[in-house]
Amino acid sequence: MAGRPSDTEILEAVEAHAGRRGVAGRLTDPGAAALTWTILLDFRIVRSLETRGERPMREPGSRDDIANRPTYTVLDSHPVPPPDDPEQARSMLLVREGSLDEERCPDCDGGTNKCGPCRGRGVLDCPRFVDCPVCEAGPDACWECEGTGRPRSRKPPRPRAGTNAADRARPRAGTSAADRAARVRCARCRIDDVACPKCRGRRQLDCPDCRKSGQVECTACSGTKRVTHPECRGTGRFTVWTEGWIRHTPHRARERRPGRADLRRATGNTGDWHENVLCRTTDKLPDDLDESDEALIAPHLTPRKNEVARRATLRRLPLAQVRVHADPHRDYFAFPSRTGIEVVSRPTSERVRYFAAVATVSVVLVTLAAVLAVALLR
Ligand SMILES: [Zn+2]
Ligand SMILES: [Zn+2]
Ligand SMILES: [Zn+2]
Ligand SMILES: [Zn+2]
Ligand SMILES: [Zn+2]
Image 1 (cartoon, helix red, strand yellow):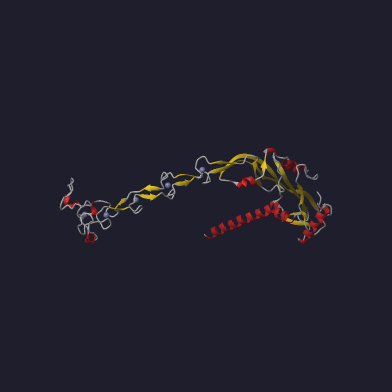
Image 2: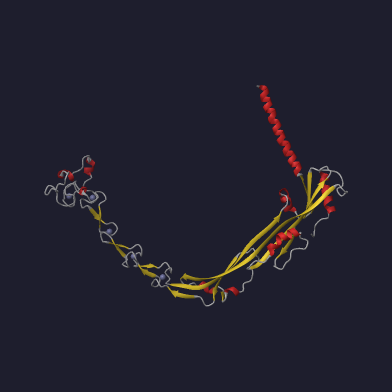
């Protein structure tokens, strides 16, 4: 791969790094170090796939804007340039040549219909009188005439079974003097202090909604007798056309071999990744690609049905792992960076496991000592 440092350059860079850690010796000497190369790989492809379709349209009113849309005759063969950037999602709306028309709404008369609730009268019937809410239009309307205008003194109401006629409209037991004081002169029998103060013995009140007229304005049409037809939004017509749509949608795929997790940040941030960009289906993968990598990526490059644009980006970073025999418990890694060769070192995985085991043993020993101490103190 172009830009890959030589083994000697790598060993010299690792030697300088190890030297700062106190490890002396020339790593380029035979047997001083062992070097193995791996290639980190990050492949992404975004392709723009095109879909097309047609549908009948019918929208209320005059749609002057539809006439400004581009037209087509045969949608499948209508030429559309591919997107400059395959990442870009876009959608085009077209009108089939000659399909644009306007038609009268068949379900209304110029956008309105006769109002249903009032049957086109503009008003609704309303009772002229309503029951008095205080005496509920009952015997309490007047203790003397019960709202009939004929006091019992002249014509007592007919007794009912189990009811004492004389007591029926009399103030009930427990009625306070204040209740009695609130009574007014009856408008029917004209006796003082016996009638309901709200209706004055009449049992009913003039209807507050229609003010006794017997009719109120229809709320559905506000008295206009007609209502807007919602389907055509009161326009009385529809615009009809055949719509064609063409959509470009990005589809993405990725393959990675990112290397050791603890090195990802270092290589990702400063690594001088070698990049190849393929924008045409005829563009070939670079010759120096490993066979296994090619087998991984090649299937992604097969053109898809309805693919109109693509951008494949292959990024690779050569990573050298160096074992320094004078420092067997550390792994050294080196890779090309934008400023030269970057070297990082980590304890070997065996070393990490060894210290983890030592730590576990220590915990066990401390616990045993504590148990023993407790036993001895008893
Ligand atoms: Zn209509
Ligand atoms: Zn009365
Ligand atoms: Zn009343
Ligand atoms: Zn009314
Ligand atoms: Zn109405």
